[in-house]
Length: 119
Image (cartoon, rainbow, N blue to C red; front, side, top):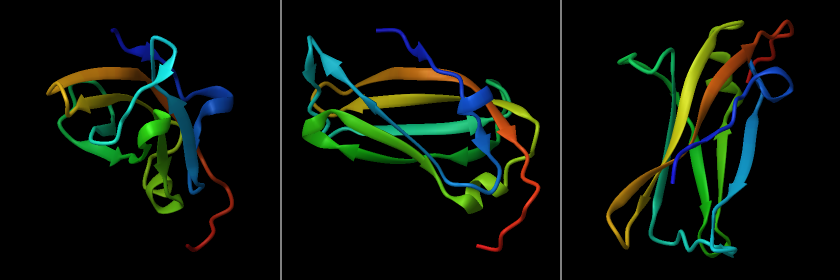
């Protein structure tokens, strides 16, 4: 299984200082994957070879439904530089097999905020 490309750019961009949340579903042969004992991790970096992580997504897993949600708080998105592109990917560690699968990857665009709200 190769990673699906899903870019967070244009209408899907991450907005600086705002909450961000996207939910995805994993199916195996048309059946939701059981994620009960699995982990999913995702980070944003300036580039693929950058050592520094700009931010880690909060990943919420709905075990038996095969769903995971990538989220960022307003504080996290406020810390990102506006009008900058970065990259991310999502890795799924299957506890039952000990395997690691890259589920998705893509570009990230940060849309700058004009109004600043203290959170």
